[in-house]
Amino acid sequence: QVQLVESGGGLVQAGGSLRLSCAASGRTLSYFNMGWFRQAPGKERDLVAAIRWSSGTTYIADSVKGRFTISGDNAKNTVYLQMNSLKPEDTAVYYCAAKSGIKELRSADGYAYWGQGTQVSVSS
Image (cartoon, rainbow, N blue to C red; front, side, top):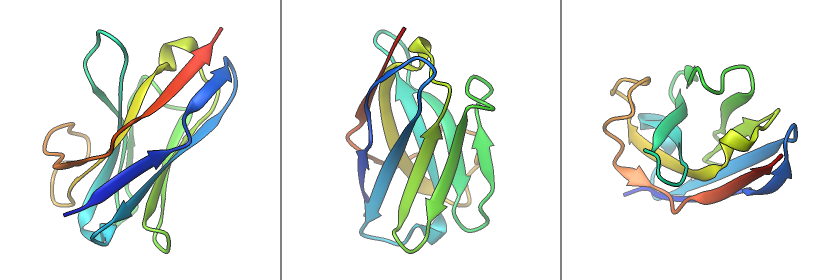
């Protein structure tokens, strides 16, 4: 079992930055892929970034490429999502999730563990 707790959401003006954190407990993340998803009202939940913990390989969705980065801290068992140049369309609930590290990094499928989500709101 892996427990995930997100933090760092909030209200920010367009053009601003936020860093989301996802602290994991229960197991080391060495065997996992970690993903950040977001879901806006009335829309599907989309994968925006993922990292394979064992290699550090990352995936960033085209919609946020060049603005968002994903990283991890082994010592803290924590994954981060740095969000820069935020836009109103980035407004959503952001979720952290974990799946086996042998699964496809770019796929949104297969995530077994989820955090509770954190709200990000970007004003124009």
